[in-house]
Length: 329
Image (cartoon, rainbow, N blue to C red; front, side, top):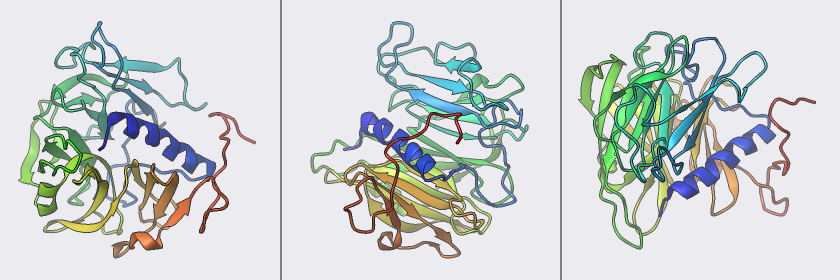
């Protein structure tokens, strides 16, 4: 069964493993049409970093959750240039609630098209998501979104404006039980600060009714100018999985599916102009990389694996020790 603890445990090792490989995985699509503003909240030209603390205490409420945003600059990140955002922050809808887990899941992108990245954040099943709006001084204020556990931002129709996918589902109980299923809505961008999108469309992916979506990543895996989706989910019988959906002119089409409980990221790992998929497998203690192509991703048997165990067949070495951030040889 998926849990916030396992998600947090594998998100950081996945990022550190890629750093050890000398690989950068940007969240933005590699296509020229998509807005490049995906993680620059204050518009200074430097990427910013969001760190989630969904189990944090806010206003005496245990597990209310908060986000820490560290802003980038010419000398990399600085803990002195940061902000902490929670339900108690000015302009953010709602108030801290026990075990809400605010910040459990988030996605980034310039939803309103003003040149500043925005942040859509939600809790672990309690409280609806909100959009925190970017500006010259970073993130501020917020607008409530319809009830959803997961949000994903990407240019799914290839028109150069970022869209928002909202996923609503129950909580798969595990232990051999079936998922409750997921309903989804697609908001076409731009999304105004009043919370009104350019259009609302159904997310016509039938397989969603058989999984409970938890999180995911977006990027253009086949280089067709439209962002695709990789969704992590509970898939029943105590098994977690990742489902890949390719965006087409007529909607989303199901691509490759594979089991595993690790985090996923999408970005152009090999510099060929197409985004690739990277996933961590907690049960196997490995990182796997699937390269994008005009046909999407190949079968999982063709993926490359990276571990810290030189005895494992097909091993691609990952350093056990990672240099501190900001230092170079």
